[in-house]
Length: 157
Image 1 (cartoon, rainbow, N blue to C red):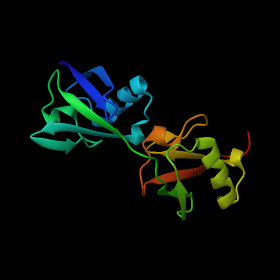
Image 2 (cartoon, rainbow, N blue to C red; image 1 turned 135 degrees about the horizontal axis):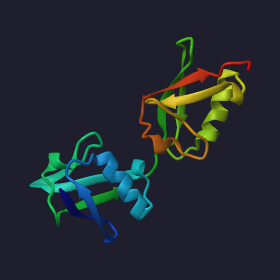
Image 3 (cartoon, rainbow, N blue to C red; image 1 turned 45 degrees about the vertical axis):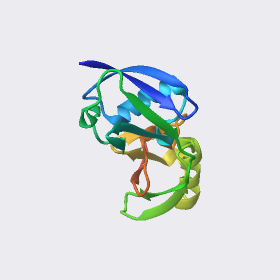
Image 4 (cartoon, rainbow, N blue to C red; image 1 turned 45 degrees about the horizontal axis):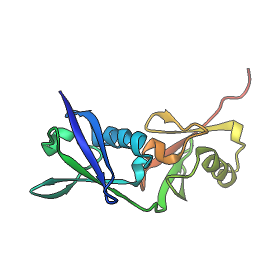
């Protein structure tokens, strides 16, 4: 069933969005990003359910008993560095400090330097999805202390 929720920024700016109660908060944030231009990793959402309750990315909107006409508050967080891990094919893990706004291409360059491997000889994936040039790390919902996997490309024809 479709719901219409209002998203209110601290500036007073309001946006109305059509959602479903079964939509995850992560998907809701992606929809908000399209309308407001605020990246999902910079969004902190809260609803008033007696007291203000922060909406967790892995939960569904139905978990908060939201109904048509309800207002969800959007606080824009400053971007902060996060620590992530890259695990190679030999099981060795390296630590990197990144920003969610870092580009995948830029990050691959850092991995290339630290791992001493040519860019065309490896690819990276997170949660089963390849990290593609032209995207930001935050586009993949990369969070603190998560692991990105480094895979070697096969040589030959």
